Figure (tube, rainbow, N blue to C red):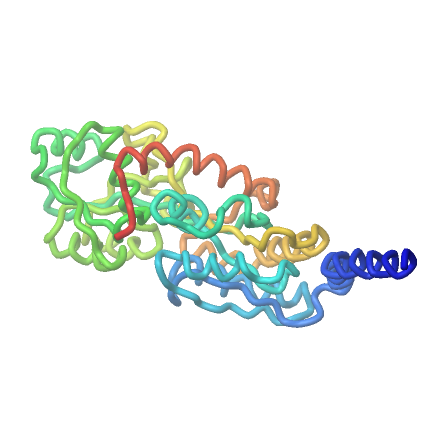
Length: 329
């Protein structure tokens, strides 16, 4: 009887250890099949562009196809929920960003924890934003624009890409730091908001540099500042917001690779090395530069840098979002 009980206990312990043992075995042969990178937005979004530019280089390093799959919905929460539930074996990853890994925790009621339920893998290229205004606005630089807003409280309008979007958050931060008052008009994306700035229907908006450059260079809009800490080679004539007169106004629409919590460290290391190799490939780098992405410095191309950035962004934006009482409809 005792012998039978011991045998049952041994079998139970062995069964419990099987998932961990199978993950270890899988980690030793990783990758043995294609890797899927989930993009939590529609094709053409910034995450999507970054993922597709890096996927070929990552495939070459890993020796297996890296498949980019778009899973849009609820500002990225549909995709993140799927990845959280995936087996933590390195075959399902997500290109998370400021929305999915910072803001959504304060705007939505989530069935997961965006910090505890993910493993940071590597920090990816980011996209700074610019403040643009209609060409007929009576201001020629940031200081004059702020003065005009103060002289006309609640009369100006700023477009956003919807509630909780980076342009919306930057408009709130701008209003807070400049002590100005203006209306905010939500659009289905930053592109439509920019088109209404060009057409003169609204006064201003924040948008990433790449899509805005043609209108800036042609004189279709005025540009008052770049939200990066230093000027960009792709837009060297655009001053930073700090240079233009608003210190500490920094924001970059960053992205990073994340895996489900529990993914083996050896697998994380392999994925990170493949992504770093892709970012350092000269051809890929030229494509990223051409679209005004900023590749993180070599010492920041790590899981640790991504985790630190996420925590810093959560600390920065939590009080701003809470004060504005932003909630998903």
